[in-house]
Image (cartoon, rainbow, N blue to C red; front, side):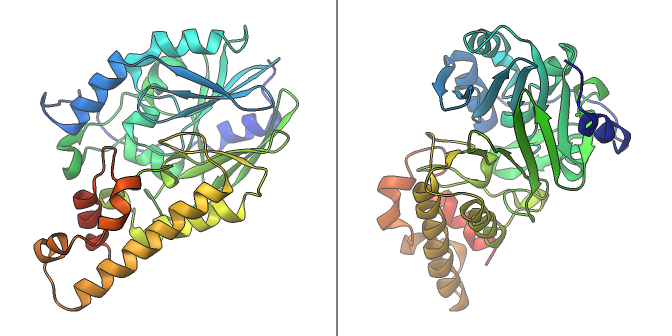
Length: 310
């Protein structure tokens, strides 16, 4: 494949940040270790969407794959332990090799596969702030894990600070930035011809989301990102969430409405001077938990996340 001029211009705009490489460490009973173990054990499920685009589920966050005559274009690279299963799943979509990938944000369950993807000869695109996060040592308390800087060969090699349009395999691909929401370096990827929008962790379909306050996320930012996704979609748009099943505009609206309702409830309780323990005891998410609280983020943890930001 000849790399489009837009890709070459991205390479010229690559921003480099300093940060010493180190090996990650994880205790065996942490959420981080549990998610990695699930990725190691889980199969990769392929859900075909439209326009030679599919969603791959089973390696942490969802992966979007576009198979074209120019090769395979990925949105997110999953957890590195899933490499063999991801490659097998991609082979079912077409014979081409991976040519490009986009990180929707820095979290390991979406970007840990960057190293093997780059080693296979592909380029990886990321927001400048997401790139910077990957070069830093970062403690995420809720995951009981400290992330250490990635090696240079494992970092994205195409770093962007503005919205970008690419033309790949007959498809127009729009890469757009959010304001700080889930993190401070979130991207969406829209396949214009197929009308498929991949939004990373700005949308957890049928699940309470994680909000990464350590790297710029907030409940208000999460709501703003959800509103942006609604504005970018129509009733015909397929939306690929960061977690959960394939979604659409209606499910994105339901997610936004849940965020707003719970944010408003917890803000009202906190404004009365209630402590986090008192707010959790009041169970402000109770009537949402049966639908939204059945995954890794339960009602108690989501209450704590929202309380932190109101």
